[in-house]
Length: 337
Image (cartoon, rainbow, N blue to C red; front, side, top):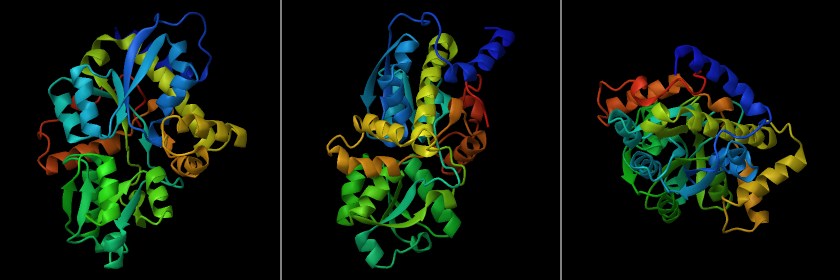
């Protein structure tokens, strides 16, 4: 693709996200596997699927669900998933350095004025004095894996408070929840639909907010294989258009709340097909509403946050010093902010 046609495509992309799809889709039932977590923060993909936005683009989507970010990055590199949404991890960056993966846009973001990720203490740790992040010194902080977003958040919080913590890898979110409830770990940070549900049920205590330590944090990104980014441009743009339409619907219903209460209830019902499926709707509704964080319009990507995350990975020796944002990000797809 020439520079001229690339710029033209980018100029049309944002408009396409908000306008009806006219004429025939670009593809005839092209099959895609989309990696996701059963989190409210992955709602843009769920909305695009349920409301036919992927179908409008000629994409036949199925979901592959994961319980942590790094296995999802491996699935993209191996071809077990085509597109995915998750946090930047050391594993993802190293796969990008090997030419196997590329970030093509942004998804979940911390935004001032909107409830975001929450810092939690186990009940046992809280009763022993862990009532604020300033008291984290010498405590255990739960992570899925070294180099995960949980590791990044915990390190940034501890550094800001001038304390040292011990990180405990537990591989899966479910295992972390169990360890927090039983007091095997002292602290954790997680998206609000999980944090508020746990705290509301008395299983943990809220001691702070991630946004107070990492403002404008680009929590999750949209990524794909390097091959898709380089050689499947039309398909990748089609995926992003559908994803962006889903994000617009989600933000209007549950973040900006401009679509009305009926639309909000419909959105919660849609998300409930994927999130808290083991609970009746009446018990899941509050947690899903409470978990509504901003999903970036047009899959825009906060490059300042990406640079900060890469700098932290380098400082921890988790990625090579020579890795740059160009190594990780294909900036030709979505707006860079």
